[in-house]
Image 1 (cartoon, helix red, strand yellow):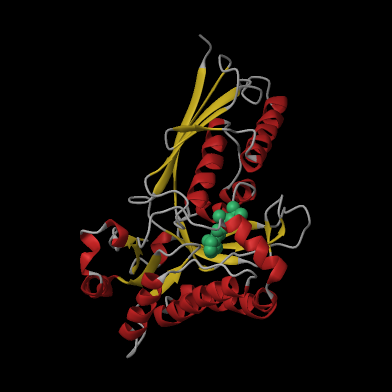
Image 2: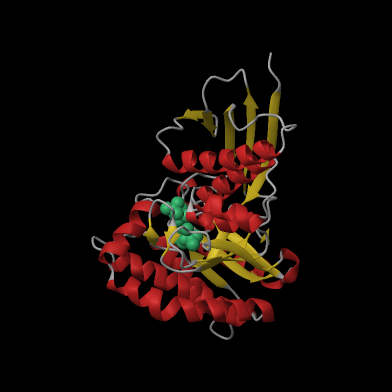
Length: 346
Ligand code: 2P0
């Protein structure tokens, strides 16, 4: 039996507070605007990937949550493998003593400990984990920002999961994507008082994938053009300033406004895309009412009906009890399994 080389890593989920929605280049995955996210702690939500390389393997194979999937049909996965193997090949060419891994077939096992494709950023943690694990297997001398350029080609939002804390994905200007990368705005230790609560409204697979949905938006929405040019550049600056200052009311206001505009852009898409449902909208009303005498919580919704609530630690128990009051069946009824994860620590 030939030697087996193996690496196993986990990667966290990130939840955007300035949303990525739209590509200017669909194969390199270059966005139409910069975005910013908060990386959640890995304690509760994460992807875990193990990769083995061996001369005994005859094909590349992938198992996702225990089920084998085709690699060849997945152009993005193929791109991540091609890029990391090319980097490994360069290392091997420079150092003849290194084991020859670039040419070996690999087996990949990846799993999420949360629902895949339910708008809970599974592709973000999944591709970040894949690329990070490949970099460990191949011992690539790249920093997180360099790796984010590879992860971006798996799924745009994945580039932001290579860092903890508060992370910007700078859209870049170059046609080759070499400046479209993630950078850390502040580490996870910067704002320990900020917490996130995930409200699982539905764990079913979403109707319109982000990839398809955002390109339909690029094609048909005039509001997206306004967002890209007139809103996001200033919002990125304001959000970075709010994070550096740990100004929760400002952070919350910008977060809620950006979530609202992202869903408005989805509605402005033709035909329209609906990600939020009646429960999502009820959560918006509850948080708005809760904030009426001062901003104490922020909601945000991605490409699905699930809510993420950001709030200072001291408010979390109160928010949990208010949501439980409005959704009393939550613990018993699967269709309303609200607030499954409590107080995810950032
Ligand atoms: C975000 N989302 O910034 C936004 C907010 C969804 C709403 O990034 O085509 O799965 O793989 O680059 O990364 C979802 O988009 O799309 C996303 P691809 P991705 O988190």
